[in-house]
Amino acid sequence: MVAATFAFLLSASLIAVSASPTKTPFSLNRRSDGFPYPLDDVDKLEEASLAKYEAYLAKKNDTHGCTLENASKRQEWHDMTIPQREEYIRAVLCLQSLPPKADKAKYPGVMNRYDDFVLTHETQAMHLHSTPHLFPAHRVYIWAYEKALRDECGYTGWQPYWNWGRTASDPINSPLFNGNMSSMGGNGKKSEYPGVPTMAFKPPFDMIPSDLGGGCVTEGPFKNMTISLGPIGRIIPDVPANPRADGFGANPRCLRRDVNRHASAVLYANYTYALIKEANTIDLFQKNMLGMPEKNDWGVHMAGHYTIGGDPGGDFYSSPGDPIFWFHHGMVDRIWWIWQMQDPENRMNVLPESPAKDDFVDLNWTAKRADTWDLVDSIGGMGGEFCYIYV
Ligand SMILES: *[C@@H]1O[C@H](CO)[C@@H](O)[C@H](O)[C@H]1NC(C)=O
Ligand SMILES: *[C@@H]1O[C@H](CO)[C@@H](O)[C@H](O)[C@H]1NC(C)=O
Ligand SMILES: *[C@@H]1O[C@H](CO)[C@@H](O)[C@H](O)[C@H]1NC(C)=O
Ligand SMILES: *[C@@H]1O[C@H](CO)[C@@H](O)[C@H](O)[C@H]1NC(C)=O
Ligand SMILES: *[C@@H]1O[C@H](CO)[C@@H](O)[C@H](O)[C@H]1NC(C)=O
Ligand SMILES: *[C@@H]1O[C@H](CO)[C@@H](O)[C@H](O)[C@H]1NC(C)=O
Ligand SMILES: [Cu+2]
Image (cartoon, rainbow, N blue to C red; front, side, top):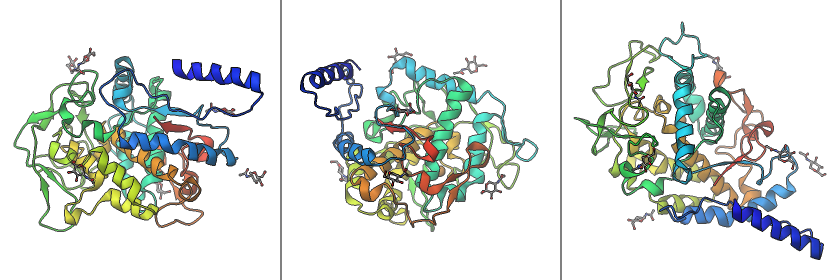
């Protein structure tokens, strides 16, 4: 901030003497107060790409007034101050204490407003995860969640993200997972957890070995959290089945996790960097991100989910029931954006399998229906309601 103000004053005075209208290039002004996470190769790539994106935006006249300068800045958890982290956590707990909007008669497992979001992911699972929708629909989904935290729970910040590389070597001892009251932790109790069944589509299903957890989360702000919806997908054997076949019944149980180093070992920044640099088409970018489960290549998206595992984190349908979900998918959204910025002219307006012009994303009670092609740019997309970037 100080540096930004200084740069602004400096450029203003230069303009005064030289009358040059040159605009100061946009800069992220990340927090850099000596916190022990130096910029990694993906962060550096992000910074190096901004000028191209800025030039692209300058030519684009439909950003609804959103600019890089006034876009909201989603921060990495470790770059937030402890009071900011605590404010975020309070808002999540608040959402978990508000009444749901979904019809309780139809979906008795929905206990609170937070569960509305979980239910959306369950009922709309195929819509959210169809090939063209994975990126744009999750973008709307995260945006709607962030909006609920702000509008319904008074949160004044933005949705944080999880830079996987920062925690790859030892996730459980990071301020994201360590079980501190200002973390999103902690781990589950060590249990007979068999590990994470991966999404290999054919038996024998690959299992990622368990780490130090697997049972109920016993510390941190979510130790009292009650999971109710689901499970729906294949999950650890001792999670009780839902009383309803569709998984929408009330099935109260604890939050379980196994913060897992075997899975996080493929989340070092070099994996994400290679993913961004090596895919020249959006189809390949998405395919590589999703990996090849049948060949034990999990891809960074699944590896992030597997790093949490447990219940509901290990259930494809119910995974947003673990509040870390939003951090993980924030990072997915961020690297899509960084991929786009490598060549904005050719990458801002492409989607996997190029859906029809009138294609739409409908998250029902969670967000209003949106044109899929209006979701590709986080600066001005969704009719101007998107106005954010990642720093
Ligand atoms: C952008 O500006 C050009 C030239 O002024 C104009 O032809 C075009 O319709 C504008 N597009 C939008 C989306 O406003
Ligand atoms: C950003 O600034 C422009 C004017 O420069 C304004 O039209 C727009 O509403 C602002 N948007 C936000 C989100 O502040
Ligand atoms: C835990 O949080 C407190 C503030 O809530 C902070 O002072 C302390 O440094 C944190 N400890 C760790 C290990 O993150
Ligand atoms: C969990 O619930 C107990 C009993 O209601 C309460 O004393 C405690 O403060 C709660 N802890 C958290 C982290 O919410
Ligand atoms: C990332 O770095 C690790 C450790 O140096 C190495 O084992 C791994 O193969 C690298 N992965 C990629 C995708 O480059
Ligand atoms: C949710 O939206 C989809 C797509 O528009 C629609 O087919 C479905 O009926 C809606 N479901 C509910 C419960 O409103
Ligand atoms: Cu999803």
